[in-house]
Length: 412
Ligand SMILES: *Cc1c(COP(=O)(O)O)cnc(C)c1O
Image 1 (cartoon, rainbow, N blue to C red):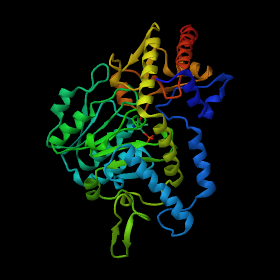
Image 2: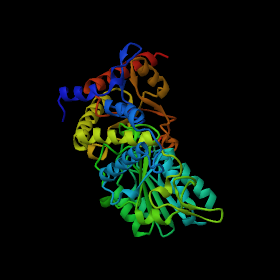
Image 3: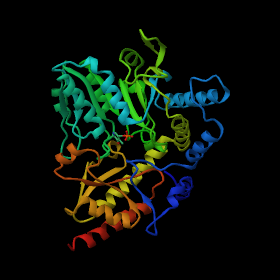
Image 4: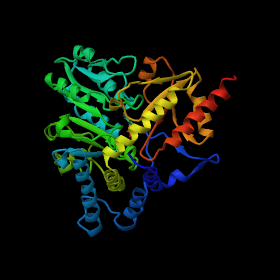
C-alpha cells in the first residue's frame, strides 16, 4: 500500500494529471481504454528521434544497429516480463486487435467445415469479429460460453461446449467491462485435453497481474502497450514457438522473407516471419521504458493499491440510491479495478456528460462489447477504471459527481 506521499510522487511523473478540464482538476478514470504516460516514456520518445532514428534489421550502419539493439532489447524485456521461454516467441504487432486478427488469419488452414471455435459472452469486439469472419469463410461454428447474472463464466456449460470439434478457444483474461478475472488456467487445461488451441486476450492484464506464459501454458497471449503506460500502435502476440513455426505468415513483404526470387520465396525465422514491413520502431523502444516504469513500482504493489481503490469505490458507489453495478463479487481477488454501472435508468451518455463537465473522464456506451450489453439488456454503461496514479479523493469526486448528475438529470 502506498502512502499519500508516494502516490503524489507517482502522480508527479504524469504531467497530464495537472491539466484542468472546464477549470476543474482532471480526474482521469478511463484507464481501461488507455493509461496516461509517465515522463520517462514521454522522454524516451524524444530521445529516440534525437539520437537513434534509423530503420532496423537491414542496415549495417551505426544508427541502424543502435536502433536494432534497442528493439531487440524490448523484445527480451517483454519475454522476461511474461516469462516466455524464448524471445523469438514475442511478435510485435499494432496491438491486441491486430494480434487476434493475425492468429485468426494464420490458423485458418487448420479450420474446416463443421469445426468449432469457442469464445465467451463477455468478449471485446476485437475477440469476436475476427472469429466470426473466420467461421463464415470456413463454414465453422462459433460457440459462446454463457455467463451468470454477475458476468462469471458458467464453467459447466463450457464443459458441455468443448469437444474434439473445437479448434480454438479464445477468451479474455480480464473483461474490459466487468473487470472480472476469468478462470483462464482451467479453460486452457480443459481445452488442451480436447486438442484445441487457446488464445488469451490479455489487453487488461499487464501491470495488473503477474504473467507467466510457461505456467499458463497458453498457445497464444496478446496485449497492447498503451494500456500499460506505453505508446499506442504497438502490441504483442506471444505464441508458443512450435506453433508459430507451423502456422503461416499473416502479411507478406520486407523483413519477413529469407530469400525472394520470382519463382519462390522463403520466409525468415521467428519472430520476423510475422513482422512484415518496417515495424513501429519508436513504439517498441519507448514501450521498453514503460516496462521499466512498471517494474520499478512493482506489479504486486500496483495490484494491492488498485485493490484498495476498487474496494473503496465499490463501497462508495453502492451507497448511491438507484445505482446498478455490473460484475459484482465480494471476492476482490477475482476482479480488477474496473467498475461499470448505470444510474436510475438515466442514459449513460447523459451521466458521462455531467461527469465530463466536472473534469471526470469515464467511458460511456457499449464499451466495445455489444453482446454483453444485450445480455444485461442495456444499450450502454458508464465505466470507471482506475490506475496506479488515481486517489481515494478522486473516487470521492466521482461519488459527488454522480449525486450531481442524479440531481440535474432526474428533474427531466
Ligand atoms: C482494449 C481491449 C482490446 C483492444 O485493444 P487495442 O489496443 O485497441 O487493439 C481488446 N480486448 C480487450 C479486453 C481490451 O480491453
